[in-house]
Amino acid sequence: MASSISVNGRDYRWPTDPVVVVCVDGCEPDYINQAIEAGSAPFLKDLSQKGTCLTADCVVPSFTNPNNLSIVTGVPPSVHGICGNYFWDREANAEVMMNDARYLRTGTILAAFADGGAKVAVVTAKDKLRGLLGHKLQGICFSAEKADQVTAASHGIDKALDLVGMPLPSVYSAALSEFVFAAGVKLMQRDRAEITYLSTTDYVQHKSAPGTPAANAFFAMMDRYLAELDRLGAKVVLTADHGMNAKTDAFGRPNIIYLQDALDGWYGAGAARVILPITDPYVVHHGALGSFATVYIAAQKIADATRRIASLPGVDLVLSREAASERFELPPDRIGDLVVVSERLTALGSAAARHDLSGLDAPLRSHGGVSEQRVPLIANRGASSLPTGRRWRNFDAFDLALNHLS
Image 1 (cartoon, rainbow, N blue to C red):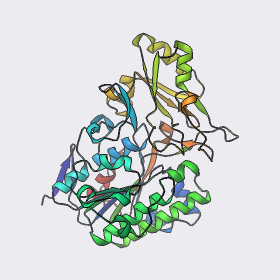
Image 2 (tube, rainbow, N blue to C red):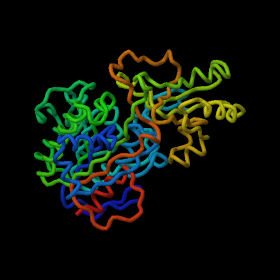
Image 3 (cartoon, helix red, strand yellow):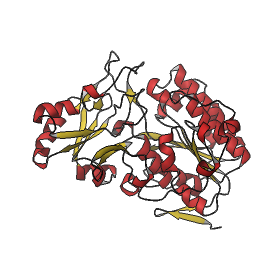
Image 4 (tube, rainbow, N blue to C red):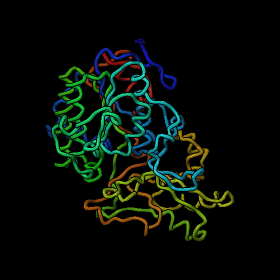
């Protein structure tokens, strides 16, 4: 057994205690702060004294797939290739979900440790991530969403519902995330894996602001499971794939820029294509509206389109492919000619007719931009020899857990 494993240019020490890295989907740092203030998260409160509490930057676009894959590879999308939940596949000449492992350009920390002989367990809320997180992984990897369909041959485990002791949760519920935590605790009790990765869903955060009863209840639930993992002797590092903000005006009405409609009005239908990388099969709680979009448009129109889009109220940035690739560490062949980022209170859409907002039963909250980039990076142990002046990223979670914690 090696003393360390090298993955994507980084060395990770072999764990002496079980390591659990948790990605809390949509965890704006203020959710934790407000839950602590309300007395809902006593375990997390104690970590301010005995643990390690940092604030980090996630990957932009601040969406689920690119950030989860950055966390489990330790590198940005420019290396691993996953730059959204959804993109324009030039080779296939089609708009497709980026949840197939064929789009992944590098290996994961999870698979590398499993290849080195470690027990590895992965539990994700939504099944869209399972194939990517479990790429070439010899270990347990399943989703709460489809926990009733697991098999030992395909997922490294069977009878997951019996193990966890919970019914199959709805994909649109806080219970989906609770199932992830409950599974993590049960697997730690049963298998004591060297490496565990848990990834939740942001259903609650899309509907409830920090400090609201629903948000505090969610973090109280999470706090109990984190405390149990701590009692079981695990090193626990918590981070997030992105933050979350309201995308509304003062009356709670959605603030939306429909980019496809604007471009069609300027240049005619078919002259430009807008891709929204937030798009996934679970659009009820956000209507496929986020704060990051890419635009495909003819070269001779790029300068004019840049000027026009930048003039729209609520737009924060309009960058060329080259500038966006450099600034946000993205693979240039998988983004458009232009990248558009909206400001904190504004969401970007394609055409109004393509968005069904009937499922929004609360004011629109979403993510994707620079305004949702700051996320927590918290551990249940103290850290030694932390580098000074370092810009911490959420994809430093395994580095923190394996190389720096006491």
